[in-house]
Picture (cartoon, rainbow, N blue to C red):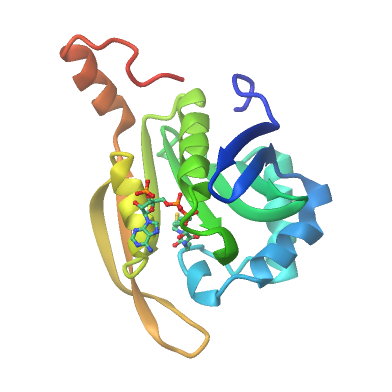
Length: 197
Ligand SMILES: CC(C)(COP(=O)(O)OP(=O)(O)OC[C@H]1O[C@@H](n2cnc3c(N)ncnc32)[C@H](O)[C@@H]1OP(=O)(O)O)[C@@H](O)C(=O)NCCC(=O)NCCS
């Protein structure tokens, strides 16, 4: 999936120099520290709680099987963000990828999330995916604004869909981006190759 993009890549953000690289088994401890430092509310968009070592180790196995690709945003040797592309080539949605992303609170609002979302989006295009989805709790204003600015549109609202540790339920919003349709529209306007791999 990653053959057309090479890592590590370095970018400059308001939070300083950030390195993007692929996550692997050697990162298990560093990613656990990152996940455990996040407010649990910020993990509710994920199907499982990644601050649990067992969940993290299952995630690493999925990466090794090639089912998912995760990019880490590193700052001074620490994990400050993670963007994941999930796809299932054996499902009825082999053309669809889900993006999951989270950035540590200490560097939020400084461009790391935008750069990571663009990089994960580029990975999805390289993989030839036609549609992308992303989901988050309805109160994650930054995440919704960010993905809308990339062309994602609201497709579903799942009421009371997740329950936090205190027992409170939260709505989940699902946004989608029909990459293939947008590409076809741009080509119809005479902008071939506007959505580049
Ligand atoms: C979504 C998230 C990854 C953004 O990370 P970030 O590093 O803070 O993002 P950036 O600084 O690059 O900001 C990206 C855009 O988000 C929007 N944004 C950022 N902070 C915002 C805020 N407090 N309120 C509203 N919009 C905000 C802006 O549109 C911004 O773009 P701009 O600065 O070019 O205008 C981060 O808030 C996060 O981890 N949230 C919790 C996890 C989550 O819900 N993830 C979504 C599931 S995919």
